Length: 251
Length: 254
Ligand SMILES: Nc1ncnc2c1ncn2[C@@H]1O[C@H](COP(=O)(O)OP(=O)(O)OP(=O)(O)O)[C@@H](O)[C@H]1O
Ligand SMILES: [Mg+2]
Image 1 (cartoon, rainbow over the protein chains, first blue to last red):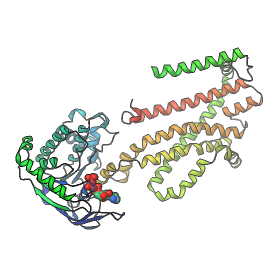
Image 2: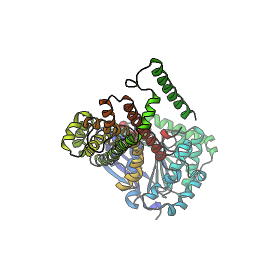
Image 3: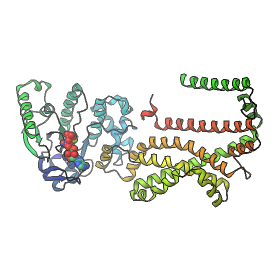
Image 4: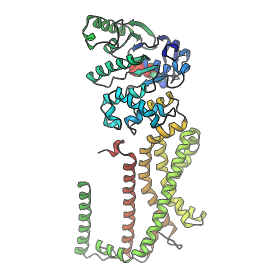
């Protein structure tokens, strides 16, 4: 079945924590199948909460969450955290194997898929390396490989490149777009950076500070995948300006 | 190379100072024997001392093995059932804070077999560091990794096998390092309290006997064996840690 069959949405979702803090207040959003959406918002506005709800790692206090995990079963959703979150005792290969292993797939059976995935993210030569022996960018590539190896319908990324340097960040962003183009999965990409959001996404959701709501949606019509030269165009700069303004109003 | 050479030189230097000091001040052997006299005594008494050493080692290692089994099992139970921890932790703490010398006489009264009593005393001192460290380790898993296991619907067994156990391993090994020393201390202390009695006796009994007869060189000889045992345990635990943690843990990288 293809991604088109599964709805991804929050409908009037409120998330109130036990402490009484309301992280989300009647927030609604829909992700079209195969769409690349960024969520932009000030710190603490509930971006991570939205992702955790979409992943099924958290339950709403009110409202409805629709995810592929509910309709298509396990491994339909993948999550990439801000730090690579690898198992430090396991090799790159074993880290990428993890989601398959948890579904009962043995090393031999999983190996072709893992090796192909490592080749895709450019880590074919490092399959036996330990996370501590990798650079930050390579660790993040491993983390993305682990997320993609199950062929998920929905990929959730929570500020994945925030800890990386500028050059690595732009390169990984471009690569991410490339991998997304190959598979046509839905991507929700949380970021602090208007530039990152403007370059990567088809649509940007801007969230307001607490209690979090989606206050603005900005579509970016430029076709994907985008050339790095897109960053130099007036269109890109106009989008960045628009996003900065929206972000400022939301804070 | 430096890591072996420097400590060896230090030890040799200390022994030389001791030897020369004793000779120069003409201290009698029953007050402070020179290292050469200790070594000689050790050599002459080796057959009987080896038997006692073997007994002490047996008690120490058995207590350590039981402390590992008990500490890990209790930690796992606590981690699975938090209510159990609330209920039983005070007992564990009471066992931990009571000086073993103080309860050893009671244990010796209640338990007929001296060997079993010594084992219990050594176990009581040794199990707590393993329990508390392992418990800490079982809870130290990265919250994001926990979420990842949840996202992929890992079974409790998969989580234990591939997340909790590797996370807890360095903590457990830290506890083991402490417990190894403590089980030796526990075994010796309890035997000191038990006094030299029975057919099978350990190094503590040799030390007690020798002290009754003011055979100071023999006391030192037995003490030397105890120190060597402690050092061997320490080195053994270190080697085990390095072997098990391999390249991944920061503690074993240099
Ligand atoms: N488990 C929790 N219990 C109580 N409050 C929480 C919990 N998780 C998050 N919060 C609160 O909810 C609010 C939103 O948190 P969230 O992590 O979603 O923000 P964020 O937009 O991802 O922030 P950042 O950009 O800094 O990562 C914050 O004020 C946070 O303190
Ligand atoms: Mg966040």
